[in-house]
Length: 544
Image 1 (tube, rainbow, N blue to C red):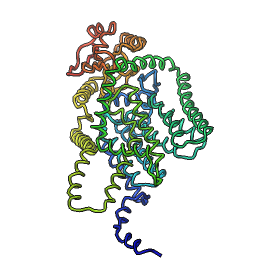
Image 2: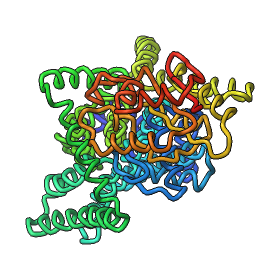
Image 3: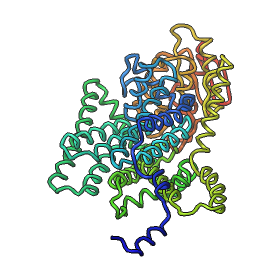
Image 4: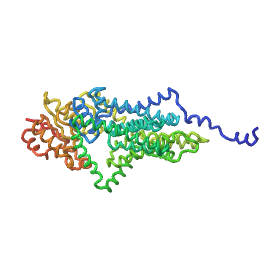
């Protein structure tokens, strides 16, 4: 029988059930799940209108060459592992030989990433509000990267990361451990440093689950075996295709490229610090930083009430910090590099945003001053989120595409309007003047843009532009390019004069200067070529 004091105490408490029920962890209905995923797809749709830039166009052109019988490391040479080129090749094979093909495949893969993040959180915490906000955060973060921040090697690591988080939360079977290792190996085919996911998985397995040491050791060995299997398959491909020697040349270049940033550690630390502050303040934004901080804090200090999803937060924190570590190791801090953290970041930030929402939603009183403060704070909070950047780039891309549709003579435009517009002009010039069998060679950072605009497939091996610019490039590459041009001069030679990037190539030379510096090339240009089209960026020469 209740006492009178219990009755008074109960009567004195406000009824918070209606407020709590709005934000309490629970599963959505089927319609709610479909609506969440539909919102993610809609948020990703503007990426269909983003166009190619220098890097992306190189991937596209290289993929076209692979589909025409080329081999990676022999006919397409880049410092990146081959998987990104084969993703582009799959897009072209599925959706056609146009840049929209990779955008369509990317939309599918990024939508799948959103779905994986949602189901991951639903499984770990049975909290669909957290899952919905996290998946929407991922879509906004990805799409706000604009053209150059999407469809890069880093863009597809979140899909692998989300799959790995699923496996880390699964039952500790041997097959699960091998599958985690296989995913880490596949990640290395996007970028070698992504192999750090294996270390993240091993640490997460030991630190967050604390299994018996025998099982922990077994799982770590099996994970390593899974990664080793992918590496073994890769080297078997190199041997069977006869491209192992070319791969070794790439490794020689990569060793010089990797040392480039670390020659002056003090300057690298300063540049890295500035880049981190710039990215997290301008791209990731203050709101996401605060929300991510809440998620990381909760992973270290779990709630005493047995809050669900703690292990997921711990795994996501390890992944988030580990991937930031790989950026520091690479010593390259372009904004698109941070796409690798987005799956882990979305999980952490989604939790933080839900925590804020629930904290506000369970306040006992909502008076005039509360609503007035909310009217001021909410718009400011949105301004400090990725939404303004998303709206800006999404709006620009759609408006540019509509302008292109009204002008049928123009191709797609990108963020760097000057470079893309001139590449289009060069491409149209070549397209109009080219006869069947006429060869085209482009020495440019933006070589892919020119090949794409000219509807030309490189007859010679396609090298990334630093191959003949960098002082640490293998002599075999420079000798091969020089001998090929002297033995069989192409009808069109295109040189770019404004692409000096010492931080990437280790040289102050532009592509035009570096190519002319190869023995015999300047004499060849003077003796056998006439200027065809000269722009502020490109020089087009026609063989007499």
